[in-house]
Image (cartoon, rainbow, N blue to C red; front, top):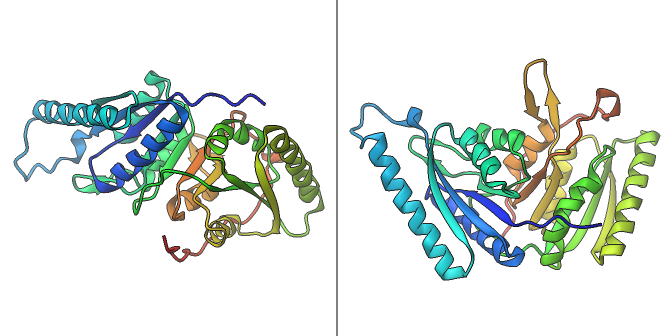
Length: 301
């Protein structure tokens, strides 16, 4: 299986410590993948407090553009990788997605608890909107630290299409880190058809891992609470990267990131690589599960 190259990383930056952690993670990835970085700062005019004297929007754009370009210049000098920076004005998630399309980014690396002004931009709905609408996979990085390598990767698999497609993108990250991959095969209890589907899916993955020289092991687990189970296993296995298929639920008017993806991204203590499948699944192809979770204890770093 030919692994697609990861040549261009888009990194939203609001100059907070959490967004700088995401930047450190992206820089390490860029060095391993020989990829270029594009730093993006977004000014949302609707977030300004009219009661507080503020520079004009034009002045803010000029200041932020100078700051982001200086940061990009320093990254290039310090780490010997190509890095550019820009400032855009508008809705944070919309501008991130637009920039990803214009730059043809292969991956967005974004902090999940960055903040700018009066509210957190990179947590909750903003991060979910990026995952939902981005033209490429999204890696969300928790606020508390940065990651420079991924040695233990958890790869949850469910009896739905998309596992091989998810692996096709992630393969280069797995190989460049020489990581050990744990396939967590999840299925609803007592559903024979789902178990057979899952066994076939896992067998195809294991065969591909062997061809690619990937070290892997497989854990089968019956559960109704898949988000909770994934988070628990991530902690118990001392995982440093989660790779998930970002599922979409649809209504008559809009797409919504599914509960599984929301709960994983919001509660994981390690980076989460969310990969949306290219093909939409019909209702008959989905396995209906209950989604639930309890907050997981923070693993000692």
